[in-house]
Length: 166
Image (cartoon, rainbow, N blue to C red; front, side, top):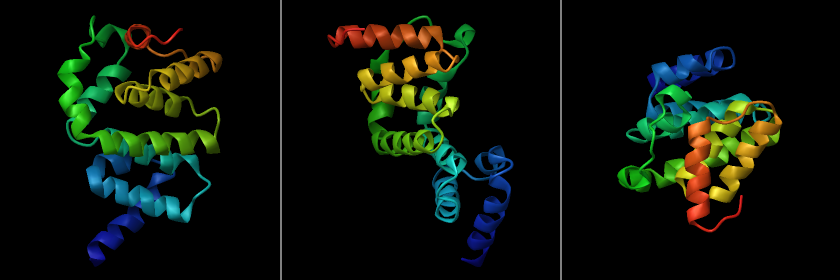
C-alpha cells in the first residue's frame, strides 16, 4: 500500500513536466489511478485529463485500434473495416466513454488543445458518434491542424452511410 502511494506521489511530481513518463512507467488501471490522483490535486490543469484520456484509450487491445486511426496518412490503411475492430470496440466501450469524457474536460479547460480534439474525434468515431466526430474534425481544421485525410475519408464515408449530411 505504501509503495503504491509513493509511486503515485512520484508520478504526480513528474507528470506536469513529462507525462510520457507516466504512460511508460505505468499501464492501464495504474496510470488511470495516478492521473486521477493528480486531477484531484490540480483540477484546473488540462494536462492530467488529457493524459488520463490517453491512458484509457491505450488500455489493452484498444491501443492498436486507436493508434491506427491517429497514424500519419502514409501508415493509415487504404480501407477501414470497422467490423474487424467491433469486438475490440465493444470490449472497451467503457474505456472509450471515459476517455471521451477526459478529452472533453481537457477541451473545456483549454479550448485550443489540438491533441485532445484529435483523440476525441477518433474515439467518437469508434463509438459511432459520427456527427460529434465530424464537429471535432471541423474544429481541428479551424485551428489549423486538419485531421488525417484518410481518417476523414473513413469518417465521412461512415457518416454518409448513416445518412448524416456533411
